[in-house]
Length: 266
Ligand SMILES: Cc1ncc(COP(=O)(O)O)c(C=O)c1O
Image (cartoon, rainbow, N blue to C red):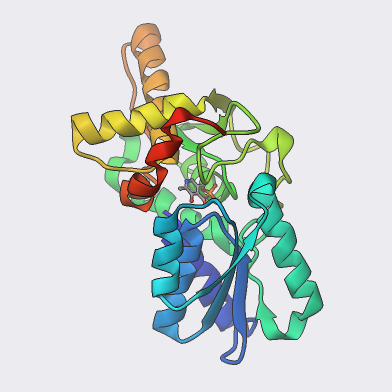
């Protein structure tokens, strides 16, 4: 899910001259955008330096480093906001050296989902889709996909999912009431917000692996949990509907290193 925005942010910046061969790409990321920057950086020939909380999974640190990118760690107690602040500081201190896509403020992030994800969903489902739900991180997926879906001739209800608590274990998602609000976020876009518990997201990830053969991450679990809740309500109230959500990433980016965290000690 984060490959599309990472590539779009890089290609848009190459096109208008913000990313040139001597510059290092720097950004804060809880992991997946980092993996994408690292792989596209390697493929396109740009150095990449990433700020992330030190408690992100070892699997993702290893993947990022395998692509030759550098990681600088921020305080895990400050979550993704700590990584954002650290990236800002590094850029302020050495502005000429860096290209800073800043996925939280970069219109190319939602644009990737407007041009890609939203269009792909409509291509696959067309008039059948009635509801779309996805979790908020940078909010790029929600903003860009919903903008495209809302242009469809039939109304599609777009629902944002957020962690129910400020301290949560749904990696990649933000509890906006206690966070820095991303500049790309427009609160007029979601028609509704659903609040998802860490345990609900984690348990759904387990169910998806065991019952569907889909080994996915915890934000994907939260998304599917939200989608099923909406589907149950639609079934009761109007006999059904077509609910779309996103499986954000694969479970192998979390699995082994996160097992001990199943006690939910966040
Ligand atoms: C695993 C995971 N889920 C969900 C999200 C949220 O997506 P977005 O940033 O588009 O809001 C992210 C974002 O980094 C993520 O890495």
